[in-house]
Amino acid sequence: MTDAYMGQFLVADLGRRSAWTVPVPQWLKNDFVGGKGFGARLLCDLVPAGADPLGPENVLMFMTGPLTATAAPSMRACVVTQSPLTGIYLDSFFGGHFGPEIKYAGYDGLIILGRSADPVYLWIQDDRIEFRSAEGIWGLDALAANERIKADVADPDAKVVTIGQAGENQVKFALISCEFNRQAGRGGAGAVMGSKNLKAVAVKGSRMVGVHDREAFREACRISTADIAASPTCDALTDSGTSNAVPWSNAVGLLPHRNFVEQVFDKADRLGDEGQKKYLFLGKAACFGCPIRCSQMGAVRTGRYAHMVTDIVEYESAALMGSNLDIHDVRAVAHLVKLCDRYGLDSMSAGGVIGFAFEAAANGVITPPAGVAFAFGSVAGAEYLIRSIALQENELGRLLGQGVRRASKTLGRGTEAYALHVKGLEVPGWAPRGTPGMGLAYMTADRGGCHQRGFMVAYEVGGREYRGKTVETYTLEQKAEILKGEQDYLAGTDALVKCDFGAFGVRPESYVRMLNAATGRRVGPDFFSELGERIWNQIRLFNLRAGLTAGDDRLPRRIVEEPLPGGPHKGRRISEEDMAFMRADYYRKRGWDADGKPTAETLFRLGLTQKNQFDITAGRGNRLASPNGIGIE
Image (cartoon, rainbow, N blue to C red; front, side, top):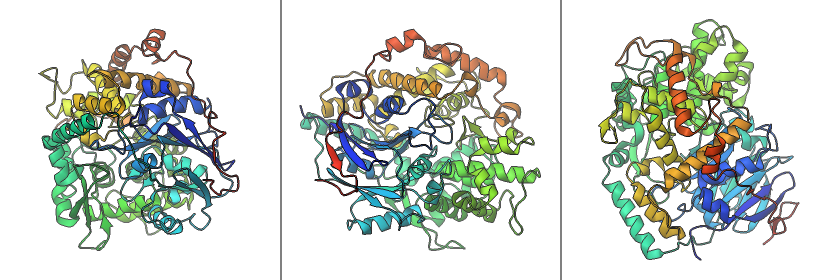
């Protein structure tokens, strides 16, 4: 039966310089669908308990979903691995064209094992796999490496993911650059790639991606595209991407300022859509098959950074590298974000780390070098720290490259009080004092502090109703129930792999219609919530095995102990008692015990007691590369 799957994974063992295909088991498609679902289950099966995330036993996976590389609008792909920053599960989603190219080459995902003795990159052309030396590319930044590899393979249309110097140096929040202006940014997947001595993966495919029922799929895609066209939120994203969220976040009192001491910034408008339209935007660009076109391509046209080509400074970077550091010149923020892109650093974590360092310097805990100011508002200080962290060229850079959790433990002297992280992942740019449901979302997110696992802000200050009723901002009741529903649905649709922006428009029944037409399944309207609950609990099992406890489901001390000094939520915090109430309520709604462990009944109901296990050696006889690295057709 024709469907939208390619039916196989490509496995590449860097240590043995061997590659082979493994069939995608039917049980895996039935129970986990693709994308996040595939990654969640395979990480449990392939990474042993106690594994070092930067050791050869960790795996690095690029996963597509059944709707990736089809005409379905606004689809993506994801990276899945064990995070070196948090020590727990990590997925990081990316747009662009690399994900579709994996399917064009004939695979539903790439699974990378082991560690190469020397720097290499993978060159994948359908079933021809080469392990090529990266000796002449190692040391280049992520964007320069992309250009060099396309020249090396003599194919400008190849799709390439790379790491920069931060990944090579195994900075724990290094990212993977997925073509220009698209990154798998959070949690340190680039460090995992660097630990494997893998500079890049280049893919060029020639295969077609089929669907089960072409006419039904064409109609399903038409309806989904119409959903997007009818969405005011998607229309706003077309106009200015997420930059328009900056003034809104500031108005509702959630924009971090000076390492989250405050949640309002009087110069926020300079960082938002109007400031970026004035100084940056020139045109629009889109990911594969996306009608939204949220990218706002442009260039800095005036000032010190003139002539620098840039994409939009999206909300999270504007918040964490801008207002959080008390930097209001959007041209300077664009420059700092571009430095992160080149070096291969997550600009969100980088902004959190720099804010921490600036506050530590103000408190006399760290001392800047002569001629450099570690002070809020200092672009030069932020520049210095980005370089120091990425290149690991001094002791401070090596310390901060571990992230704020480890840095604060090493420094001590009260720095833990202003280390803003959840489970080691630096907090996103939606400061949660005043929105307890958003705080709960951070507490319980599967990869650490993350705003994409249930955006409770929309209910608490954005006016979204729940079951036809307004949600009271400060109440703790019902927040766990709402959040669980959000987390389950998002995890389920992340198996497709959908883009969050498209999901602002595409209705659940439209996703169901596309999946059924693409795969031949016959699922109903509750399918994605049921699937997502299974995926969420599978990840919880992995995280518990990795050492996570209920005590890790908590917020940073600043959020818990310090009432807001001003703004719309003046005097608000999320206390220990608040956290305890919401955590217990959330565990009950999830069917977990008091220690945050899924009960036997919950696991049985979700089908997670079955003994199916993925066998990565199943197709080893189908070898696609020789030990000397020359591909075999």
